[in-house]
Length: 323
Image 1 (cartoon, helix red, strand yellow):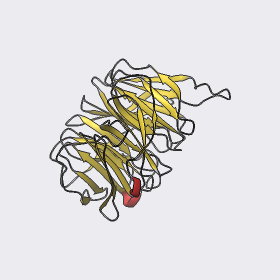
Image 2 (tube, helix red, strand yellow):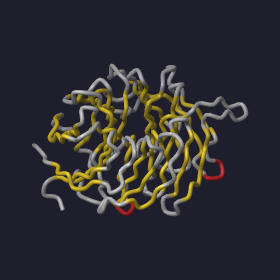
Image 3 (cartoon, one colour):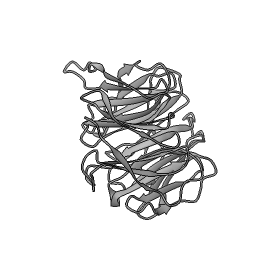
Image 4 (cartoon, one colour):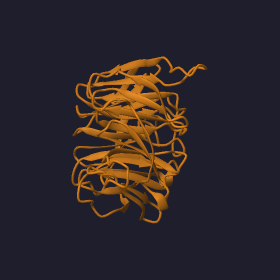
């Protein structure tokens, strides 16, 4: 099988620096992006126009997580200032300076943040290589609730909740990936599949598989299911190779059959996970730092995706023949 994806639209007001993260949401068929220029923007995916934006933060924004209903965007600055943006009202409804020590809690500037799909909390990671669970409620936003210990003092590159909200995955600078069960706060699996830093993590829609993208130019598909005895699943399911430089981003299609990856080699690849092969390669004009599929509620699964990268331009792509 091969697929052809066509460039359908560019944003009308590009970011002034690289796009570090982007998410296509089901809410009003919109996309949200953050940039090294300190801005966050919400886009109309039909026209490429900015629907809402905030004044630029002093420093770059490095991490983004959007609630399943597309209303709230959690984002994080390079120094560790975390904010929750209500994209309907345009108001900041939560703010946490993670670099400030509060009481007996040690401060750790957040680098990557992730909203729990069930609501109420968010996860963060940073220099310690652990995951911290915080309140996401407006009145107590940012308050520490627990710390999930990885046992490795390595920099946390990415944390990501599973779609069902039962687990959180962590990747670190040396290539390890950790899976934590949120109900028990236990570390349930450790994967050493990569030789270099893991830049991006993506969960399958059913929360059974995890895809990791690394500077070692590979994507690894992991089975994270546990057996009746509580032991982790079979671990590595597949290794996807074909990029010629760092793989910076990845995402699952809404039906879980396809995956997408963006790379420093200035290409985007679409992968057929059953065949363990790339079925489409798109040449872009700059390093591709983030990719995101259009949600299934808005279109046929795998029909369209959005990308952002080094040149600050949000681009929309559609499979040939799609409306």
